[in-house]
Length: 282
Image (tube, rainbow, N blue to C red; front, side, top):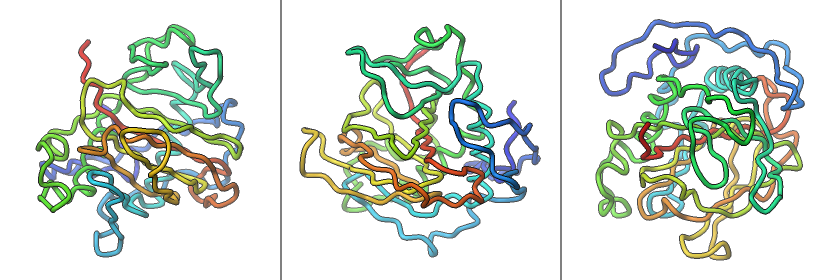
């Protein structure tokens, strides 16, 4: 059983059972990220996912099934995630620039949990890196994903934009992510327009942002070009896309350096944590 991070002690969102607090081992900044660890970046204990109420946030549906919730993560939760991401970046499979089949190299650096993604498949071992099995996806992060889906889709309550969805696409109890892709963007990194279509499940993708702001471009399901909507994602923001928008093209054309809060423990750059259900067995 994984120990919940400070800030995530009460993420049993379905049964409401509190969990004992635990403090993770402080991990040094992995050399691959190139960022010094900020002083005082230890996560603060006691934060809760529901410390911000819906009334203090503006939930905005960008497209049917695509929802942006600004400021969803508390500062304590962001700090805890930064510490955890630094630890995961050290291995067993270290953070790396992904090499594409055409020989190109992605400008973002990526580390995976649960399943290892390489273009364009999931495996348990990172055969394109060091052959090691990737770290497990912790239970508290699965629960965080469920909490995110509940927030984005208002616990599955039907609305004009969502009442045609299949129930499992937005019901929190049915959302069980089994992989996380963690991307680190420095001030030069970008992500081209692409679809997340290597999964066999059509469950939503949950995206969390920490650090510098970015321009997040959310498009349509047919083409990489217009129409699309540019959204500014800031540290702590939640973005969920599923249902009719599950296969929408999306990308990050620009990161805005110096716009993050060093209090998160990230001195520069942007962390993006995406949770997904692969639909795979084994």
